[in-house]
Structure formats: structure tokens, C-alpha cells
Image 1: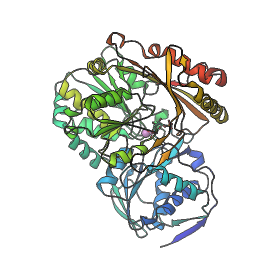
Image 2: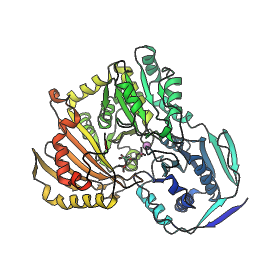
Image 3: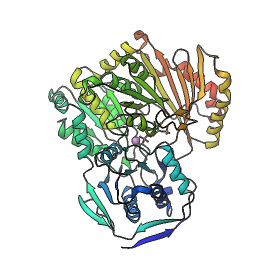
Image 4: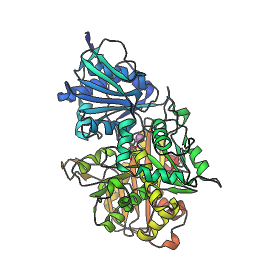
Length: 544
Ligand code: VG1
Ligand code: CO
């Protein structure tokens, strides 16, 4: 057995963002770039020797090569066993599921989620801890610190593992098991949801659904679960073949990017239910016949209907939402008499609440929903939750949402993204906003009165860690909000996200167009931050 010590020099830019380290593929392909990060990770995981690691990715370009590199570094660092997905594939929620089921020490996920792939696209790497969830900031900060002082990495000289073959292999003293990435995950879904009842819904012959896998990781999962186990039509899954460049698309499940699904769902003979997931399978978009459900509303509606679902019949401990996510969740939590937590953006902040049994459902406005069944957001889980509700209630998606609004009121909600801005310009914009904060409280902006203006910071209720600078928020007396944040997942320039929310209790006004209902807030947001003037952009790049 030949373990080589390779000397290296640090890269200064290996700080993980909202969800792992994300860079252009070409950036990752620089000499020793991936190796440095992986060795820094192992250097920080002192108790890893002899333990089990889960490894897989969303199938994007560079996934197979990266897996072979990581396996050899893992072996040289004395990892005991690695569970790798067949062909190197694993959705993010499936990795979380396997870590928990097999009591693994942790997992490495290769993904840049919804960012485009291919040789000129993005790549990413993320570490999940033994609860199955994204490493907390204490761990990611330690990896970053180590990456700035690394001077060598260890690697086993060996042949590649044949990832196309299921089975057990050895790599030095390490055992490598190439496993089916779907089975455990699908079994967990069968435990949570009433598959027989959903199958009966498909059997009626009048209910049809369409799922857009966007040529990313969820294709094989959706075919197995929806078409095979639940008996949906054989053509239910669109774009079901995972491709290294995601077919040239942008696998972000929203109205702007999931074009083939949206076209299908808005034509005259549209299916009853439509859904899509993202590159690594943790996001979801829910559509009814010519009807779009915002992710924030979806979270609230799942909570309101959880008693219909076997896995949640005993009730919810609480709900957690990221700060920019709409307050629709707070309203249903209040109605149910349970607590609602507000965390910074990114799933890593839900881990402690879930582990402590304080929250059962979690959600983000960015098309992410999940629960305590694992420690990641979970795209197909959300789709199955909706299917189970539809199978019980036998109403349309639109009716279910409108009824929800008539009980709880409607939180009109939209996010405006300005992508690829110069970094210094966007930082200055945020800095200037921050300076305005002290004078804003109590001020009237248009028709609305500001009751809170701050830069969001969070104290974790479990480990008391403090996270600051999580977005500038303006809350108004009538529950409306404007939030400004810079993205932590981009790989090119900076992305400014402006989140807009207005509450409307009156059902007669629930059918307004969202951008119309939010028009005055959009104007206030622009005026305050001088977005158009500073960026020279007349409109956002993407509106969701
Ligand atoms: C975005 C979303 C955030 C999400 C993160 C990772 O982060 O806003 O809600 O948790 O992506 O999701 P940011 O920093 O760009 O706003 V995924 O599906 O990329 O793992
Ligand atoms: Co994702």
C-alpha cells in the first residue's frame, strides 16, 4: 500500500458559503484545489479514523473524477468505510437519510445545487455531520482556517473504484461499498406517507401529475417512487435522465427556470398537479392546474394539513423558517398553538432545532421544505406530502391554497434577484442601507410605518452560538416586510436578493397579481437602496 504525502500551498478562497464551497468547475480543477479542501476537512475531523463516510453527488460534470480523488484521500486518512452511490450519484436528502440510517460519521456531497453545470459551469462540495445535516459554522470555519495553512495532503496510490458496479471493494485498508442510492430513501418515504392512498388517487384515472427532474439527480428517484411504487403514468417524469450538464439548463425549480413544466401546467388540458426539483434534489416547486404555490405558502399548508399524513399524525412540535421566508408559517403556528422559529438563511441553522425536537417542519422561501425525517430540505418529500394531502382531501391544489388563505389571510410574497453585480457595488449598497437603519424606525415610508429596522442576527436557542449580518430587514406595522441580503451561493460577481412581503386579510383581495399587490413595497425597496440608480438595472434578473 502506497500512501503519498504531497506538498501543497494554500488557496485563500476556500471559505464555505450558505451551503458548502462552490466555484466554477475550472476553479476546482486547478492543481491540488479539491485535494486541499478535502484534506483540510479530514484534518478537522480528528475522530474519523475507522469510521463510515457517505459520498455522492448530483451527477454534474467533474462528479466522477472528484469522487475517485476523495476516495483515495479518505483511504490515506484512515477512513474505515465509504458508502458511495452507484455511479457516484446521491441526492442531498438521500445522503442525509443514509448517514442517519447507517449511523455514519458524516457525508460528503458533491453539488452546486441549482447552479448550472458542465465544463464551464459550477461545482461544489459540502460536508454533513453525523446527524445528517450540513456542518454548522463552527466546523466550516475550522475547515476554512485549516485550508489557509495547509502544506501537504495524503493520498493513496491505487486504481479507480468501478463506480458503475454495485458491490464491495477495498482501497488500501478502506472498504468501499457501492450501493443503490434510492432504496433507503424510498423506504423512508414509504414509512412517512400513505402510499396505498396515493396509489388509489392515481388509479382514479382523472388525476394526472407531471414531475420535472430538470435532467438532474431526482430523475431516477422520481421514476422509482412515483411511477413504479405509486403507479403514476409512465410519462409522469419529464427530463428524467441525469446529465453532466443538466441538459444545458438551470435546474432551479421556479417559474423562470422550469420552463417545460410551467408550459405544461398552464395549458388548457394541464395535469392536476405539477412539481419540480433542483440539481441535487433538495428543492421543490409545487403547481396546480394553472396555479403556482409559493414555497412560503407551501410550508404553511403542509403544517395546516400535517394531521392527514401518517408520519405527522401525532402533531408538530414547532415550525422553523428562515428569516426572509414569509410569515405565513407564523400564522398557522399560532393557530395550531405551536412555536415558530426564525433562523438565518441556510439549512444548517435548522439542525439544532430539529435535533432538540423543537421543530418538526422547516422551510425556506427559496423552494426548500423539509422535516425532522432527515436533516436537509427534501424535494421529493414535499411532493409526496402534497400528493398525500391531495389523496385525502380530493380537492384541487388551487382550492386547498385559497381555502388556506381565507382562514389565515394571504401573505403576498416575491423575491427579486439582481445577479452578477460588481462585488464592491453590492457591498456598498448594503453598507449604505445599514447606515440608514437607526433613523428608519418609526418613520412612514409611503403608506406604511416602520416598526423595526435592523441587520438580522441570530442566537441559536440550543448551543447559543451567535450569527450576525444575516440580512437587512424592515418590518412594517401592518406585517409587511422588505429584506435585503447578498447571496452566499453564487460563483460569479454578487447577487442582491430583495424579499418583499405584504399581508392581506381580506379574501376579496386575495386574487390580485402578486407584483401588483407588492407594487408600493417594490418602489420603497428601490427608493431606499437606490437599486436602479446604482446598478443601472431597470429590472431584477429573476423574479420568483
Ligand atoms: C440560497 C437560498 C437558501 C438556500 C441555499 C442553498 O442561498 O437562498 O435559502 O438554503 O441557496 O440551497 P443564498 O445564500 O444564495 O441566498 V441549495 O438547494 O443551493 O443547497
Ligand atoms: Co439544492
